[in-house]
Image (cartoon, rainbow, N blue to C red):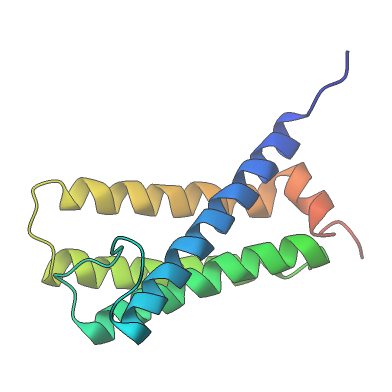
Length: 138
């Protein structure tokens, strides 16, 4: 019996993850632009407006890089996503060290960084990602 391969399942999960990130970031950016929106706020009120702008834009950039790269089968997708995650990591570092006050902030930052490393490594090294993004072509 066939079924879906592990690599395809991971890729499908990453598509869903990045779609979710894109929707969340667009909701947050809409809050930032309009002030009031018809849904519950997603922005952290502890973050100043300039920080929120960079927060939402870095997430939009990373999610869009992945989704566009997936659709277009663009060979530069792993590198572009890595750049997006780098931007998100810098924003996370600033938010964690300058604005967040809860006890779990360091664990949350470590988990976020671990996710970036795991996804980035998978995008560069897995056969499924190489096949999807044509990384095996000359």
